[in-house]
Length: 177
Image 1 (cartoon, rainbow, N blue to C red):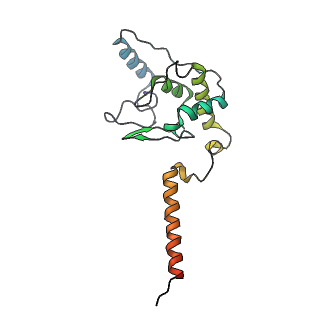
Image 2 (image 1 turned 180 degrees about the horizontal axis):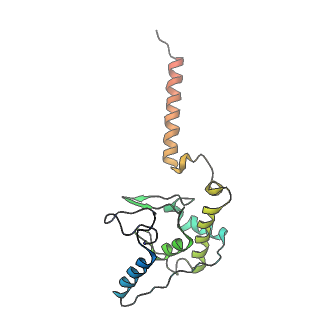
Image 3 (image 1 turned 45 degrees about the vertical axis):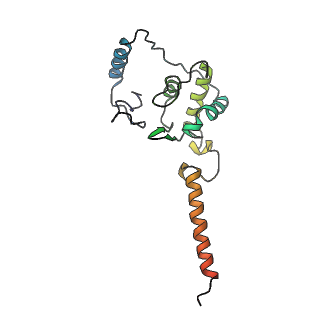
């Protein structure tokens, strides 16, 4: 949360988006040390990401992450004022840490749900989506994307054009008598 720029939060209970960090890494370390000093069982074990399997990571991403972050990590609303942020700027470490720590409304995926290898695979897949030849379009599932706004927006546009065409057609064949 600190190195993604989401903290310090501009307002309580506002889900921030990924921006440049407001604090230096030294300041972040001091904050983490202080918060951990308040806990009787502080655990500063950070996730480690190994090579990872992109294909396996894609399957795990679709099963566990895509319902909130979207099929290609473009981010999406998860209800109320909460959003699952886009993953285009997330580092491999930030993805792994978010899976384990579950910032904001994101669930925490413990080792009983996703193994360390699963986390590595997902983090590498997200990195692959960011760096794949051809950019994000190469990982796009296909179809008319309409700026990745989703099926509701695309359906709305289809209805508007369809109704507009129907009105024009009816006016052409109608009589003016």
